[in-house]
View 1 (tube, rainbow, N blue to C red):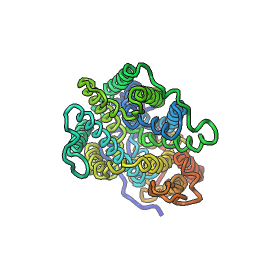
View 2: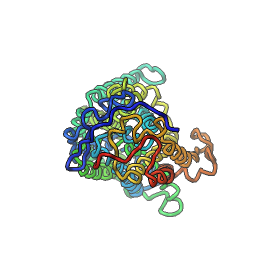
View 3: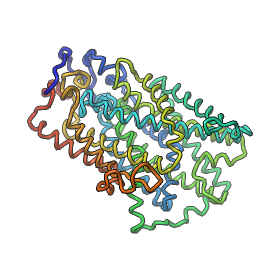
View 4: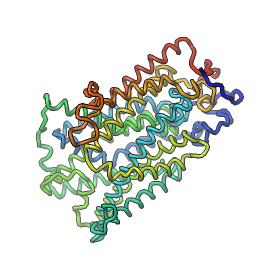
Length: 522
């Protein structure tokens, strides 16, 4: 039974531009503080001006960070050679680019962030389910990246200031490390607190700076090694036969999961795009090429470290700390700082800031959401989450990828298959409208999420003593699906959602007080 709710007067028609972009007339979103605040409203058409370069720079800035650098090293540690590792990363980022572009389409067209887009499929209240899942993941990633960045600064400062790393310990860590962590944390929040325009300007100059820093590291180690070393000649321990594929597919899903977070909330950025061409070209140029080249660069640099030091140093901070040149150490320090701030702000603060604002628009705006993200990112104790590679890579990335893939499947199914990219923009903010469903929840989306989530992560398993899951899987019959969690979640949720929604679509009726659109082109 559909709940009866008071509603605002009929809204004025949306403002449609000649290029298909849609905006809202003043007051069209109504005045319900449960669903409306300035940060959740569509970006006015005239303020959508991010260009291809802005999006390419965004991805360059996000991809060039310490965890990205170490992705290839993790695959080589599993037995791949450098060619197999780079191929896996390249393929994963081409695959994840597709849902990026599909969910990103709503941004330039309607100017809305991810949690508002999710209202179309989950309902005005139900959208808090995917929003809080995405926010929780982002808060954890923010803490992880901040801890890794703080560690990098700590190590490099330890080379500059003797005895820095031997300070008295608090909570098992030197107090100087905690200082680096807190100062780095405060710097990040100070930048994001200035808003999205400040982030755009930061990414524009951070991207080329980080590229120069990575190339400088390559040049330095090549000079030290007198060449790139023997690593490129090392054969794969897996070959290309039966031993390779059981490692390849879980690794591919893990690499996809690395950016599966952004495949959901990319509208948070594309809502500022000057048009579809800007976001499509910018993302296509920025994501797969950058991640592939960065993976190749990390392998080449590590090859040089093998020749110089006799062991492969996959951590760029540990490698940079080998130099005794103060200028080189300072340059590496600034590069690590800029690279980590760049990815953390864009990937892990913007989304939860909007997601938390969606939960309580009356009391939480973008800046308040960002501050909450920073606090939660500390409370999850990222130093423990990254303590073991099994917990960090297999448990964290595997489960996160499966759940986020499930949400992505529902968003894509609703926006592209059910609605054919046509949204009733005012109703995304108004109780009792097209997207109210049953008391603000679309049970079909919740059901699709439940089915997709169980199939994607129900078979999660850990090696004995290496993780939190049973060796046979939480749900033993689903164990074979766990290695393909992201793909299983996306595909199964998409199919279930379409199957549940299609009958109502064919009849022209929905739960809630829905009517055919009165505003052509909206």
